[in-house]
Length: 254
Ligand SMILES: [Zn+2]
Image (cartoon, rainbow, N blue to C red; front, side, top):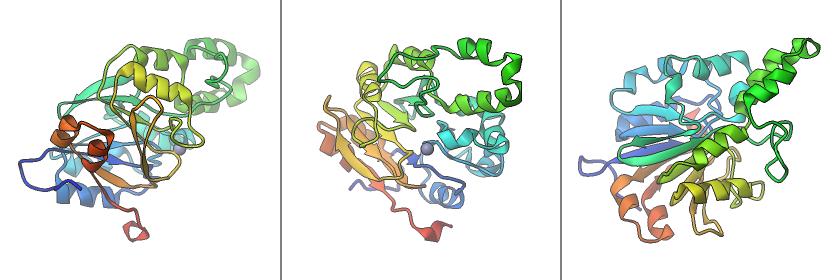
């Protein structure tokens, strides 16, 4: 396990699906002062994200990707997608964070848009909207549109696949999880990342994909801290896993 604390080490904090839990994240930021924080989706925050994390933002800048639950209720959606911080969503892009290039893909695969074992039903939001904004869908259009903001769109996947990164953060799982998707193994390979960190299934594990890429799955609201220099110097996937400190998630955080 890596040491933490002190100025000699830079840490990135990753948090598995918070599902409304924020107090333990704030406490851990105060205690550990990570360079930045990345939430892995399904935040389901009852308050706008910039209210919750304002007091710690100078210390540790917050980023996230969205999960499937973040579009279930209008206020959960608004609290992240309509926050003044909405640009902190890493979905569909690569951002240099504490010298690590982090690529993000939020959401989940939904067959009504794209089951990745089949050709996509819709490549773009525009193509979907041109059909579903028709008046026969009027009653459900706005709710469906919001829901599919947390679907994985081929247009986002394809843009991301052209970039290069060190780490890929996903809500949905690659094939290291039994419900995972090969399309995400392939995305990681195209990006050239060494490490995937994902949420969604609330299962903590470390594993290696067939293509050799390291995977960390985080449990419900689980916090992980990655020592940046240990990650960069890692020669093997075991070295990558050893660059993490994992906090167990327990109900004492409630
Ligand atoms: Zn989820």
